[in-house]
Amino acid sequence: MNTSTKHDGPSATHKAPVATRDKPSADVVRGWLQEVPDPEIPVISVVDLGIIRHIEWQADTLVVHVTPTYSGCPATAEINADIETRLRREGIDKIRLQRQLSPAWRTAWISDEGRAKLLDYGISPPVEGTGACGLGRPETTVCCPRCRSIDTENVSQFGSTPCKAAYRCNACLEPFDYFKCI
Image 1 (tube, rainbow, N blue to C red):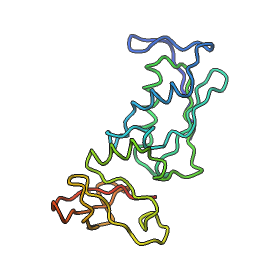
Image 2: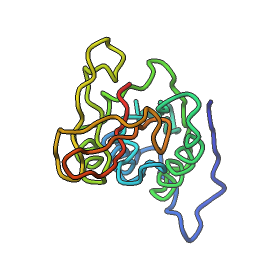
Image 3: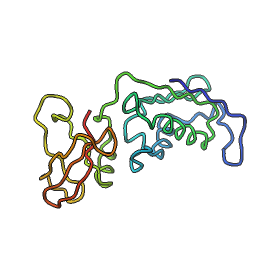
Image 4: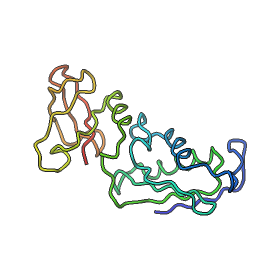
């Protein structure tokens, strides 16, 4: 899905449009997007989640390539709106959000900082290279985000959202979500 948006002019809540010669670099834009939270897990940004694939200028239009965590993700529209709102706040006048489905998003794209944020938030991050990733290897026990014990068990493959499974810690007896490995 391509979303092209035109801005009719600055308002009290928007900066003046960015002039062509003042185009911020992809790194600067990525820094702004680091402040855009995932709507389902607000402790992690869309950058840390790994869904911002590429940022580029095409003439005077900023193009941001976004790969949803899965093609039917119900938060996609909200994420796109939040990205656009953040960029408009910086005065970006012409924006195109490019939906990029290939290659498909993988949990390996979650940054190390994002994984730490998930754990601190109470969600055990995905364990790469396990049976949960569909690689045919035995499932490994995941770390309890509360007490950090590895004495945990899978209660259900279905957690609070489609991307999570329900686990229980046998040490502290607390339930928690595990971010499924894809």
